[in-house]
Image (cartoon, rainbow, N blue to C red):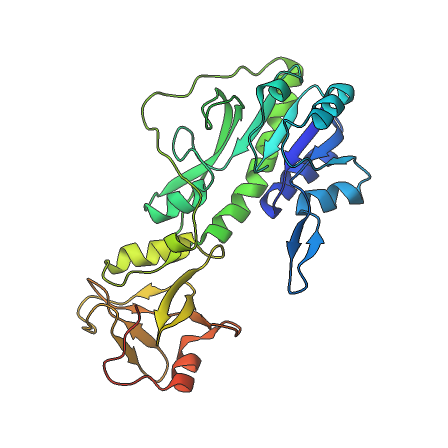
Length: 310
């Protein structure tokens, strides 16, 4: 089939590469978000998907919005049979949805109808799900509501971060997307409506959402921190300055007792009190500095008696 691939960030790269490698399909165009400023110089940088498309000589389209007449005209001229989508980052209008004869097929990193929205992996970890996966479904104007084609599943480990889990799902989901394209071309695959029960939403996670409240139980803090690692990154305040936090580890019940937010610096570890058991800090990132082991940070700042994270 002739394919227009729509995607933007790094987790979409395995899917595009798998489709480029498929002998059965031809990627005739790529739709991605416009080049964005990045780095200290704030120079414009191509998206990871745009860079991969450039490397393979595939035409790249970067409209500010896919409803722009120029893009819609180009889409009609391109005449794709199907438009696979992975984390594109913008709503596709009806005028574009109707162009490919097999529609737009989205690879979503959850087991729909669970965790519809922009941050399904983050939501699954934060809420303590044990199983998640990826789903291919027919894109429509509703929020991840279209009928589904196939799924893959994966277990969520006790120490998995969003980066860990998304990395695995990006690879297994890429193979699911290729299999979905194959089935559509063969005529052996039919979309099945999503169940009406089990719907949950996963809106975009902001920096404010990633602030750690040490008045919560240790388990909730552990899940929150892992869910926002690496992006947008967990944080708290220390001496009125922002302090980035890597994944933490709850200690054993009864081992140490600390008030919520209270710090204790030991020779090889740094503990912080919560509503239940304390947590041991992993890496921390002071403002303007690189991430470092919490014990090294504590030796440098010389934590005083009764000091807290907030």
